Length: 454
Ligand SMILES: *Cc1c(COP(=O)(O)O)cnc(C)c1O
Image (cartoon, rainbow, N blue to C red):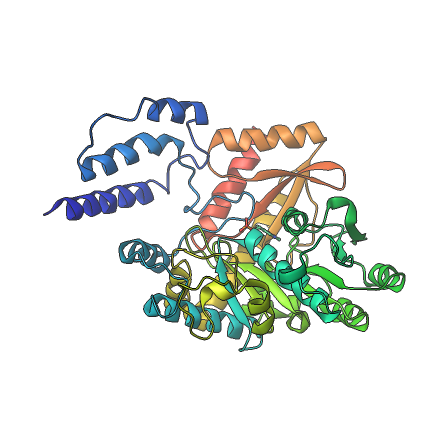
């Protein structure tokens, strides 16, 4: 074997060993950042080392600081695991080393991504002609869609952002729900729209934007308008009422954007599709593959109804670049990038239409089972309507709830993470991993039960 083959062999062996520990290792890392910094500390070595030895050293030192995200009992934030086909395809992406911005330079990976994008549009019942830009995640997908929106709503009134910039531009009314994800505010900030300029519409007890409130908000004002809706509130999993809200927004000539980082996937399940009803009438949609679709980090998608709007916002100059129709670099802020859509293709190819639906249904079923299990523990209060993948709960006081959260992490069986909901501490359980089994849910409920009632 040559050096490269021995290094790849070492990576394969170390990766398999790590994945083999997932069933039993504590889910939260045993080592802190300081522990990890001291493990890796020291000056840059004067001389190099054998490639396989480097891989072995890296894996051995990192192990205690790894969090068991790909296992079946990581329920923190909203984080998926990794399907086998997606993981293996991701290795190929690195081996191929394709710079996937241009369809002339890298036709294989551009084609695979384009087909993956089409399959997703089909699963979501979105227009087959929409542009699908592969970006690092939901944050950049929201940014990409909203940058496109900003360009389009100003273009409609004769203002060219690419030419004239933003400083003298007519103001954009940027309308968001009270329970939007923080990445919307951050995307707005990058686009020159400050927090104080956001027009915030009230939401209901599950975090859904109120249609009557949107109606009132839009009635007083005029000019370029962007309305941000949400499929899947990050704590409750709730979906906005797209049918009513989009109808209101349309009357005011708004660009409607949907943040569906994990919620858009409900559209791929015949049983859960009703949650997303009406969202197909929006102008842009942001979603993730590294959450619900379970591909390795990182992969998100910025979907825009009319590719001409994407090109207007993003096509670059650069006389040395090769153009041919619609290239990946025409629809996102990226230029050079890895072929991060390829693992998404592999995930979809390995699941098929029925497998995607089964995956989403199983995540929902796990959320229902977790809810039933937690409800059976005296003192646990479930805080949301569990109609998708998110379960939020609390026990006793805010301090009790936070203490339980810390105890769960220390105990090691599972990871749930904390939140503030309506002014009180809460714990969140996100069912986002393909690897979660019924026994994983039962073990987690048992562990939480013994922490509450030792
Ligand atoms: C996770 C999430 C985001 C951000 O996505 P990243 O992949 O972390 O960049 C945006 N919106 C919602 C609703 C999310 O759940």
